[in-house]
Each structure stands twice: as structure tokens, then as C-alpha cells.
Length: 481
View 1 (tube, rainbow, N blue to C red):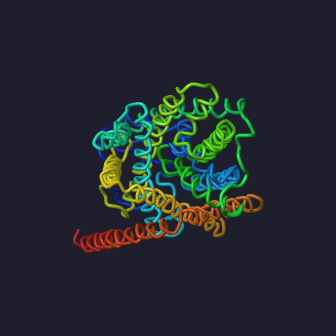
View 2: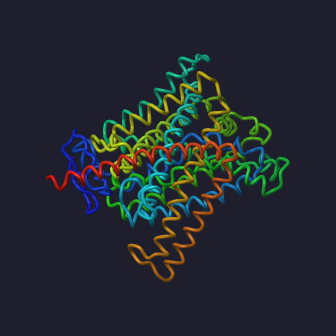
View 3: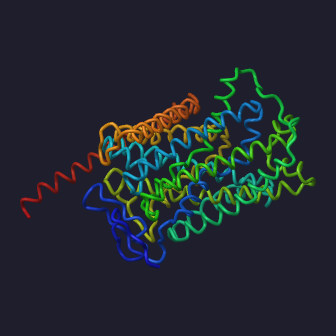
């Protein structure tokens, strides 16, 4: 299969060969051009599926019950989050038009503010990705238990969680051609039944099931913020197409479109699904539900087959999300490694995929999963999931700050008049949304997230010293040559 290249990419080595670390820092990523018949650039539909699949993982199957205690006012939080997520998606689209290269937020932060900001963005995003993978795997096991009862066996549970993680990793290692195929199939398989439940539920909607508009002991604003804190994790992934820009066909045109279309599609699914469940399941029952979509199907059509059907959908949804997140978790360190800011081993590619990055990521996520089950530290794991919400805001904030910098400095394409105002307002909204994400993460998550960042500072010090030492040795050897 011939791979299409653009002026921003360059052909890589023959299929099956590793891509070496480039001599010139900042060289554009070669995208999928180095993988021969196993690598294929993502079309607009596949890139859109990547965004939607990464945003909608397993959370949609749990969210209605999670926010039900706050009442239907939680729908207000959904609406506010949706506006913020779309603003962030539009900003990523503008940034991808300026810098259509693999790496997304890392590339934008580095172009605007230098190596250190770029490294912090890459480091934070990498943490977000592999911890999220562990969270998705653990959530998937809960639904697998419905289909294949594990009978409470810790060994069987761990084996199932590891299988859920390694199957998407193997699809990634097979090449970007297979990543795109798996992502497209998984997206279709999960969105068709989700839409059937979301739309079908409207025909069985009963306003008496909604319960109070405002529940709990907090004020209205507190209820919105509290429910938003639960919903924040559900919108991570809006940057998916931008991170993989080097693998997207015609990235200047398609990355922005895929980002906006994917975010809008996910928002529609979230809102319709939550409203449908709210209106079909009695509020008192919904608050206690551990499978709200199963209860909604049972209420709509009767019987108890809904649990099995929803479990199948949940597993497909999470495997699709893991497929996309596994690729994204390797792309950002790959871009940073090409610039000498991550260990060079992350820059190795085969068949269009940063194979070492995929392997390291899945190993770390697997170790975290095993730790979670063997120690039984459910509270710690939930805190780590909130840490991913915080760590994701670091590249989000740096990206929006980069867009503001580009607009005000006139770097690259000079934007004037109405477009300058429009892009500035979008960047401000995205920055506010990102700050809200930080606030919603909670003090414990922010505290631990900062510790993760400080650990990254030490890694940056090591990599920066190594880079300067190599440059000095090269300068000393140059006169002799």
C-alpha cells in the first residue's frame, strides 16, 4: 500500500526498519510514511472515530448513576463542559493548522515557549495516557464479569485486565493500518447501540422519573461544580487527532475537522444518553444503580437481557478507547524523543507505530493494574484517575497559552480583525475550561499530580544535561574532522 506524504512529512525507511533519532532537533515527524504496507494515513472518518472513541470510553455507562445524586442540575454541568470541550477542540484545530505534526500539545508548547514547556506537556500527557489505560482496563473487567463470571478470583481478574490492555497494544504493534481499522470498527459497534438506547429512551421518557432538579446539601453552584468534577474525566481525548497529526491525511484540513466533529459527536451521545436514562429509570433506583444503562434497557423493553447487552457494548467501547489511547500514549514521547527531550528509545518506529513507546506504556499500565488488584487500594486508584484529569490540564493550558502567544505575537500566519477576536475568545474559553478541570480534580489529585510533574523535572534535567554534553562533544570533534 502506498502511503501519501505531505510537505510537512518525509518518507521514512523501508518497512520493518526502525526510524533513527534525527540529527536535527525539531525535524518533523515522518508520520505513517515509514511503515510500507502496514502503515496508512488516517482519513477524516478514521481520525474522527479516533477522537470520539478516545473521548467516549467506559464512562458513559456509569455517568448517569454517578451524577444522579446531584439531581438533573448535573445536566447543566454537562452543557458547560460541552461548551468548554468544543472551545478546546477548536483551539486544537487552529494549532494543528499552524503545526500539523505528530505530538499535538507537546509541539505547540515547545514552538511557543521552548524545550522545558514542551517537555512538561509531553511528560504530563504521557502520565495521563498510561494511567487512563489502567483505569479503562479495570473498568472493562467489571463488565467482563457479567459476560464471563470470574467468581471473585484475583488471578482471573488480573489476567482479564491484562488481556484487555495487551490486545489493543498488539493491534498497535501490527501497524497504523490496523489501528485505524480497529478504531473504526469499535466506534461503529459501540455507537450504534448507544444511539439506539439514547434515542429509543426518549420514546419511553417519563418526567416523573427525573427526581429533584437540585439534590444534595450544597448550593446550586456547588452541585454543578461537584457533578462537573465527576464528569471531567469523560471529556479527556479532544486532542486525539492533533496528537496523531503526522498520521492524518492532509492534517491542516482534517485534524481540525476531526477534532470538532468527534467532540460534537461525543457530546451528543453523552447528553442524549444521560437524559434518556434519567427519564426511564426512577431516580431512587438510579442513585443506587451500578449499571444504569442496563436498568434503562430493562425499563424500556422489560426482561433482564439488558445487562448482558450493555456489558458487550461496554467492553467493545473500552477496547476501542484503549486502542486509540495506546497509540496516543506513544506518539507524544515519540515526538519529544525526536527532539532529544525524551530517551531516544522512544523514537524507534516500526510499521508507522512508535513500538517502544507502546510497549513501555502498556507495561507501566499493566504494573499499575496488578498493583491495584493485589493491594486492593481502590481509593488510591480512584485518586490516580483524578490525577490524570489534573495532568491532562497541563498540556491543555500550555496549548491554549501557546495559541494566545501565537495570536498576540503574530508568529507564523498573521491573524487580524474578526478572526483574531474569534480565535482569542476561543482560546480564553479553552483556558477557562482547563482551569476548571484543575479545580475539579480536587486537592489530593492536584497534590499528587504536582509530585508527578516534579519527578518529570528531574528527568528533564538529566535529558538536558545529556543533550548539552553530546553537543559539546560534537563541537570538540568538529575541528579534528
